[in-house]
Length: 289
Image (cartoon, rainbow, N blue to C red; front, side, top):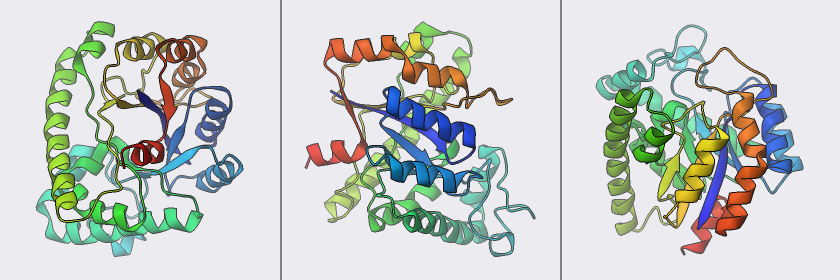
């Protein structure tokens, strides 16, 4: 069984970059998802070049962050400062119902892929801030771009409800709703991938059987991750975290507790005991060819 340990928001802040570097060098972290519009993106790219064993993907930002294009070019998407709405539901409705927003969205997606390409780093995978990449409008636009720019995998956040509820029953209602919603969205994404493969495209995009992190976002504690690893029964999985070296005022992370999990001896011990293989999306894609 292959397990990808990924850190989101790489390039957002220096404290996240430092956590990514530490977790890869001393912990179990195998990959990171780069915010190409983050305030510390140049530092993140320099770190990634120094550590070529770290797989780096594109963390698309379409809500709760800054755009790549200037506001005047995407006025239906961002405010005067070039920031997307903080609420992903608000952004998602705009992308679905506004023709003008969809046209600008296509340009913004292409700009973020182009910024990643300009780093010169191999494109490991594609995912999205707040998982907006699986929004029907967004996914249909990004899929050909992922193929064009040579992505090797794409995250489909199909989490497991039972281990999350066993670990912490607080917020059970939202967890159930999130599971249902994202399972439906991911099912649609899988059908689109299958259709492109049948048409002769999309063969290089790996998808893991499970992705853990959706239901414990910002709370990927050692005990939960150990339980997930002990109960893992699928050939491939991604476990994503939001590590940082300092506390923030954001309830869903990034935070030092996620970093501690990636550095945990108990996590590494269960990986060794179960014979799990630390992996990346390119390695998974290569193994299924």
